[in-house]
Structures are given as structure tokens and as C-alpha cells.
Amino acid sequence: MSTTLQSKEVVYTSGIDSLKVIDSKVTLPLAPTQIAIKIHYVGINPVDYKLMGFAAFKLWQSLKGVGQEISGEIIHIGERVSKFKPGDRVCVLLSNPFQGGLKTYLVTTTADRILKIPDEMPYDQAASFMMSFGTAFKSLSFVDWAKLKDTPSSLLILGGSTNTGVFATQLAKKYFDIKTVAATCSAKSIPRVTSFGVNYTLDYTSKTPIAEQAAELVQNELAGVKFDMIFDCIGGTELFASISSILKPANTGAYYVTVVGDDPHFGLNWGVVTMISKYLFAKPLWGFNYKLYVLEGSEGFLDAAKKKILVPGSEYKIPIDTVYPWTEYKEALSKLMTHQAKGKIVLKVIEEEEE
Image 1 (tube, rainbow, N blue to C red):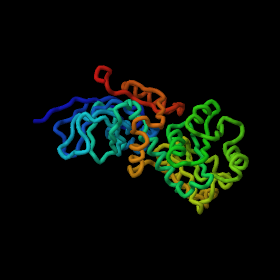
Image 2: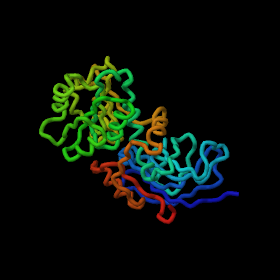
Image 3: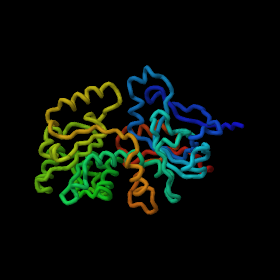
Image 4: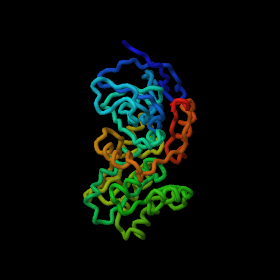
């Protein structure tokens, strides 16, 4: 005998203006490998509004969901599910960004990236780390830091106050054992950025260009030893012309990894062709390892999250800027688009009386 759970979800067709709430339903029993989760919180990321702006969606008018990072409680499982049970507190990073997590109930499968969370971990924090932590972990892994353990290893983060930059700093110090971490940020963000472990800051509001500040840092503070990695969380090309004085060459295993591209306002549109052509033919980057990385798969970072984040008394900080009621999804996305958030923007789905 089947049972139906009434649900609501936030969807769009093309663009933020098309966002709306619709009624949906979950039918029980589930398929053998499915899991039903009652959503508590949803974390949103820049990729959410960038996907909405994808030009091709004007032609593809199907309904698409919002939010890939969720936390909640498992309420039903399929007969073949053995790793989880009803009542488990979990966080999920959805593999399909169009499935969307901003809804009352989520039905997914064991193939998705699902982790149990400790009893003492708040649900809002559980919805606030997987994308940034995973992106930072996988990006930093392009360099073999273990081979550099007896050297003055160094990392330059562009966008030290971003969520991904914050996790990159913590991973650099607590997981990869990187000796020196430098990061760009505004003057007013210096205390916050250094509190996570950054050794040197480069003020992007200064009259001195970041490229010049970075080159001076290498010469004056790092004894002329260039960086083993530049990890770009904000986009841009400012360092390209001076890259040879900042980053070690490709044959040393050094990397320039960007999770944005060379356009700070890069969206998922036909501009990607321009970005790729710039990368392929940008003469200043010849001789250097350059990687545009988008989080995919789960190898490595889920195990790291289990060991470092999802443990009692974890020393990793999970910054949250604002928690909005889920009905204020447009306001939450607008705040995210200002690029001024100091931590994750989170939407609360569960009602107070249900907690």
C-alpha cells in the first residue's frame, strides 16, 4: 500500500526572476536503493545563481531545483539500503545540481554523497561545509605536498575570506602541513583571515597591485622562494603577467588552480569559450601548470571530511554568515550575489515546532 508525503520545493526555469515555489510529493514505499530525507537546512553557493544565468536555459524551460548542500534526517529507506537507517542525521552534497535540495523532502540514492553527522553538530553547520571543503581539498591535492614536507612549502590563496578560501587555509595548516599561507583580502578582513591560520595578507584595496605585493612578499619574506601553488577562489588575470616571479614552474610540480576562471563574473554561458581560449593562448602561462577545477566525484574529500569535520570536537571552523527562512530564498541569493558574505548563506527549511 502506497503513502504520499506532501512537499514543497523551490524551482526555476531560466534566471532568478523565474524562481517559484511549487507543490510536489514523495510516494512511499521507495525504490530499493532510495533514501528519503526530511530537509532541515540548505546551503547555497555561487554555482546556484550562475546556473540560473546559463543562457541555454532560455531554450530549455524544464523545472530545475536550487541548492546542492543539505542537512536533515532520514525518514525512509529502500529495502537494499544498509548503510543508513531512519533517524540518521545526515548531510548531503547532491551530484545533480538540477535536482535541488531546497524542498521539504528529498529522495536520493546511496550513489549520492551522503555522510552521517555527529549528534552535537548543528544542522545549519552540516549544510555549510561540503562544497567549500571538498573544492578546497581536491584543488590543493593537485600538488604533492608530502614531497615538500622538508621544504619551505607555500600557498597563495586569492580570496582568503571566501568560504572556499577559509577551508583552504585550514586544510593547508591542519591537513597538508603547508608551512606558509598567504591570502588576498580587504584590510578590514585581515583579522578574520589570519584567525584561520593565514601567515601573510595581501590587501586588494591597497593602491599597490596584488601582483606587485605578491612579488615583494616572495623576495622579502620568503627569501626569494616562489609559491608552490596559487589557489584562485575569485577569478581574474591580474597575476598572469607577473606569474614567473610568483609561482614555481611546471617542472617543479607547482600549480595555479582556479575554481572560477579568468573572469571574476564568470557564469555558465558562452563566455566559457572565451575563457578557454585565453587559457590556451595566454603566453604568460606557458611553462606553468594551470587548472580550472570544478568539484566532481567524491574520492578523497569524503574520507577527509569524516576524519576532520564530522568528529566530536573538530578543530575546523565552519563559518556561517546568515540563516534565512527558506521562504526568503530570493533575499538569500541576492545577499550571496553581493560577494560580501563572510561565511555560508543558509536557508532553514524545517519549521520551529518540528525541530
